[in-house]
Image (cartoon, rainbow, N blue to C red; front, side, top):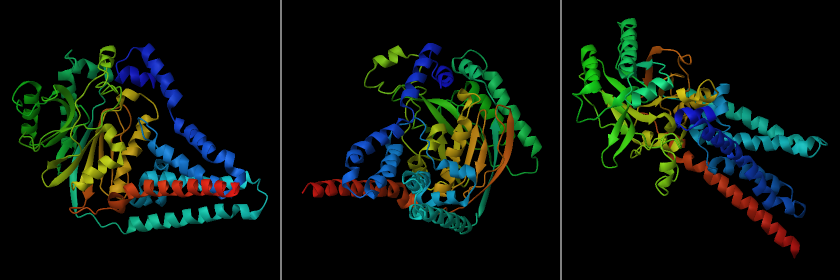
Length: 455
């Protein structure tokens, strides 16, 4: 964490260490918070009511705290099921990965009861047996959901580039201290290498990662500077491109983290997409607008303009749901892309700031999970890894190694008329709604029994 804050937030190491301590103090505090809330609601009243009521409250409160407690990276227990490969994770089409996480927490209750009762009687294990049976049924249902998916009727060829640009090189390029020629050459050379290795393959467009182009791209000024060099390259290769780059929001007078789509003639196919969900302490300072002095104290932290929400980019007949880095972690954002009619989701990311840690693994699975919830392929282009793609059915394609130059041509099958999943239409609100309903029933029953006992 300290390394990331130092590298990404450009904070002094001493300040980064303080941020680490603060993060450790509040990170995953929702578990403790859930215990405190449960103890307040049920702890002193357990002897006055039926034992099932406070026990039911425990997973309900835990799941609600997991969902609503503020976290930078909204990890939950559901993502581990995708890693497992069991058909159970296909149930995310119905209840999302948050729903799978809730299922996991409630299943733990079934095994907690016999432990609580001291393993004394077989009847204490009945609920655990039911939980196992439900899990087996859910796996069968997940296999059925996968089997009934409509067959893709279209395919797109995407040449994805991973240039492995170091943090120092990116910082120097951003500040105008050289390296821009070097970075552009790295991307164009890798792209040429990919084209040469696939001479007979249909390549619909190339995909470069987040902020790959090391200069600002402005739609009204493509004939100057490094932008002109990029356009000439695309025209010379008759190659379409989707790339991350910086740009500018003239109304706010701020830099944007953007995604651009060019056709093979070097023309923009659509207005740029500007990143909407910004990363705290890396792309904005929390409460910086309310307390401007914070921006004075933390001058090294970027202050990007926010985009206007989910947006599509077009490459020929393919509608791309534009997604930059961290935005892939939020189901509601991807729902917006699906509602707009995206054929597939394109996620561009730069995870170089996290070094050799677990973050690239977690971030990858959290991003790819959206493919199951909305049954649309996800293509993920990163600077240092992991670059990969996943089909609407959850098949993870070739995955890049970490921290190496790399390119790969993905042939992505997709549906010209993608379905609206149950999760997209109802499930994104269903799980929290059911949890709140259970909370009201259990806590209401708890207080009713207590009041009844007093009389």
